[in-house]
Image (cartoon, rainbow over the protein chains, first blue to last red):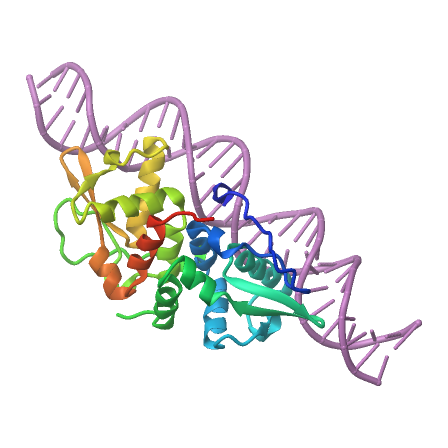
Amino acid sequence: MSYYGSVTIDHDQDCPGLLPEPPTAELQLACVLHALADPIRLRIVSELADAGGDELNCLAFELPVTKSTMTHHFRVLREAGLIRQHRRGTSKMNTLRAEDLAARFPGLLDAVLAAAGCPARH
Amino acid sequence: MSYYGSVTIDHDQDCPGLLPEPPTAELQLACVLHALADPIRLRIVSELADAGGDELNCLAFELPVTKSTMTHHFRVLREAGLIRQHRRGTSKMNTLRAEDLAARFPGLLDAVLAAAGCPARH
DNA sequence: GCCATAGTACGACATCTCTCGTAGTTTGAC
DNA sequence: GTCAAACTACGAGAGATGTCGTACTATGGC
């Protein structure tokens, strides 16, 4: 989406291997919702939440898409500020930025995760 | 988004003038998030929430787009199940389906509205 | 050095999305 | 019946998105 504006990606703590991400204060609601509004990405976020803060590499998610498509989705999530990524060896480890999100948009992530947990009823 | 599947739009109560909308039990999370992931639509939802359940016609929202674009956004919101629309006279009145959403995705709408209320910090 | 593993870059493509303008419909007021 | 107001339908266009395949770049183990 073009009109979200460019995601400011600066980071003060230059932790080695950490990939650029937007600071907490600049997370954009529309951008976060857009990142969550895709079944694949929702699943990634959901599984990261289930991991309880543990780091998962990209291939730990058995997603029904190719590696290059995975790269795309992980980047969308990182640029929206939902996940944090840093390199370790040949892998890229992912964690959910749950605390940052809770600080910026209280209750939002929890509500989405709860909603994602109970799919359909009828 | 194609892979949400077709929105089931049946309605038992054939209230005259009510436009078709998905039943509460069939609201799709990804679909709802996608509908909210647009600044214009987020604003519509926000203003409807501020109206506290009152009905607002489409032109009551002073949106920076043409009428046909408004029609488009209101339709997206209705088909996602976020708003209810029914005709009255030459107008189409809109209300937020706050209770339906709270029943299906507890806390989600509230969190989004709260997040939309406090835009940016730095 | 060689190789396998994990991931990226890039281009391509089909589809979707947002936007508009113009023409049309429906409704209520006169 | 005529007219204005509110909205819709339709087509078009620019741009974004999700997907893939191929080629490429680390990184670590041998």
